Length: 533
Image 1: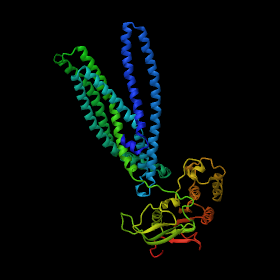
Image 2 (image 1 turned 90 degrees about the horizontal axis):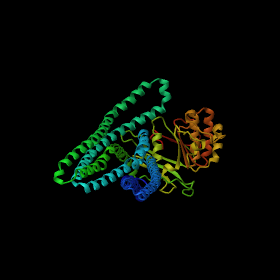
Image 3 (image 1 turned 30 degrees about the vertical axis):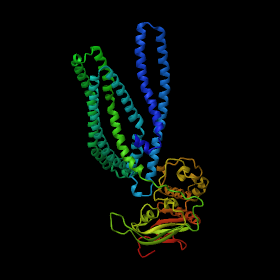
Image 4 (image 1 turned 90 degrees about the vertical axis):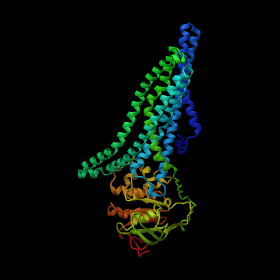
């Protein structure tokens, strides 16, 4: 619980107040039991006025109980939403940190954001509250049994300690199995996401059998951990249920055997035994699901916590006055790079400058290093040797925040045209209709509130919408990866006219493998030719 408090914005006083409400709820059950017992005694003695007063007290307590339960439920749900929001937001910030090598695959990301976050979010309902109820019930039960027979109390406590020890061991087994299972499930979900992304190809090539086999393989890999979890869960249920009944019989047998030693009455023994069974042993019957959940939660915390404790550097977006448009530029000096798993130099001693006006073409064959150079410029990778500097901006401004990147495949969402193109940024939406019309997307310009259906967009439409999204970001630079692919000749000309228009007020970097659209006014940076600067 301390870990959850540390990684979220929940305050100790909020949790303390909620636990106080929970104690009051548990105390209500004790109060009603006492009033019922007192009412029976009063009724048998014929004290009508006192009986009426007891009923009135029970009704008042029920009203108060309803209000406390309502307040507890509202506060619990709000805290759960806060925990979920805090963790999901922190994970997203972690995914977007500078080091691109730390970004998880889509299966792991899905489980972290959804499954693990939900496990942690439920720490009150499925973890803390059941343990509080368990603790209060057992504590009150021990106190009562001690007042009746400390011999029986010792026996009940001993059995309780035995159950607790067994629970701890089985908890560790479940936690270990859950950790293995979720790692396999990460890969399974990543495969399923890939399957959905390629469902048209799978259908066309009729290779569903391959995907079905992969699906079965993941289930087979997960089978040992699922079996281990099932075994531990079954052992908990069996030990608690069978063990509790066994403990009932043994404590009763020993209690009767000790009657002559303790001098207790049979009625007193049975009263203490009944209280011990109900308050100390029986609560263990409902503990198995709680332990199973705590094992899941422990696994989720172990997965999430390392990402939330990593220092995520804030990315400061450039604001007006942060830089002078005429002076800002990106300068690379003797930049070389090779990936750790290979000694082949992707880039060698590359010198370049990119100004925030005009068009720069990064040209090279497939595999020449164009995308690698882009990642170096965006600070997603670091040069093996040499350096890349951002000149004309304060040090707090990260290079990635200066660029609007348009990938080869721009992902659209099932949302309005405006939402897709602005992505909740503060950019001016009034520019969108003109931009859409310039790229022959008039039907979207006519109604910016219409909902886009990504699966109904052609590749060319997706690419042109992505270009508009990049332009609308109004960054000092816009970088486009093969922006003219999947676009017919007419629309290629329209795209280039728009980009040249934008190049008068920002730097435009186009990654391509041809010289088809290069003019004498453009800067060309050839990648893959070590002799060119």
